[in-house]
Image 1 (tube, rainbow, N blue to C red):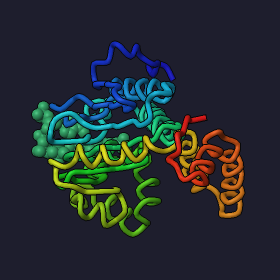
Image 2: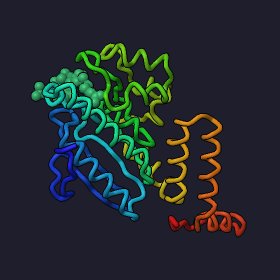
Image 3: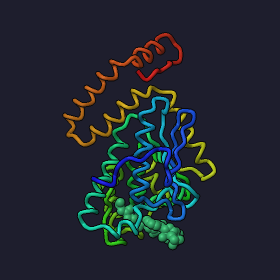
Image 4: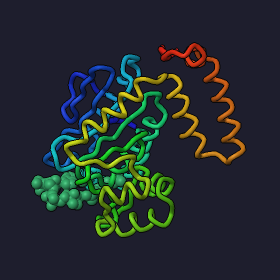
Length: 271
Ligand code: CAA
């Protein structure tokens, strides 16, 4: 897939990438277009995600949107309109690959959502491990209003997260089916909804809890959940047993169990 090469991390123009205190924050930075996702944004996002995951000192990745109106209003509509059917198919597969990578990496990923979280934006958020939103956020798959359908997992991940009944409604009604943050919380689409002024604290709360745990065990849980959900129950349980064995092979397992027996706090090393 030409044109989709990785870019130099120092040359980011469409995202802001910051690494601090074990947290890599990626801010989609096109606020005038409500942080819409074009190929340039997604290429930079992908590069940053790989960089953060390969950096062992980064314990959590946070994806968020610049400005106070949107996490992301979806795929960039002018770019989308310029695509031929084959280009659109390939683009959809490429976007899906990036969301799969987010699910496959070891580092936990939090979507910090304030404002519109629509179309490809919701699809991106749904591939993250946690979704924490302000009470002024709005969620939906409005692609149908453009005469198109979600192309980065919206028909599939939304169904797995909220069930077929609500997925049909949100996908088919488009703009008329947008839901607010309270409803998204009730539907299990997001982990937490807080007043906007408490959003940073709520995200930090998750970050601190995650940082206290073993990154290697967190990575194994990610794999067990994200791979297992695609399998039948017998295979999935077998896979869980394999993952369980892998967890027991780590130094952090020895540390966690020893700390419990010695009545002290564990010091996980990620080994
Ligand atoms: N792509 C490109 N630009 C976008 C955009 C998008 N998805 N969404 C908003 N913008 C731009 C607008 O064009 C506008 O730019 P100008 O000021 O230059 O005109 C600016 O952001 C602000 O938007 P609005 O003036 O429309 O703001 P609003 O408050 O009136 O409405 C909104 C907000 C309801 C989110 C509306 O912008 C909207 O409906 N956006 C489109 C949402 C959408 O359809 N998303 C799905 C895209 S397709 C997709 O995502 C496919 C996939 O699955 C991969």
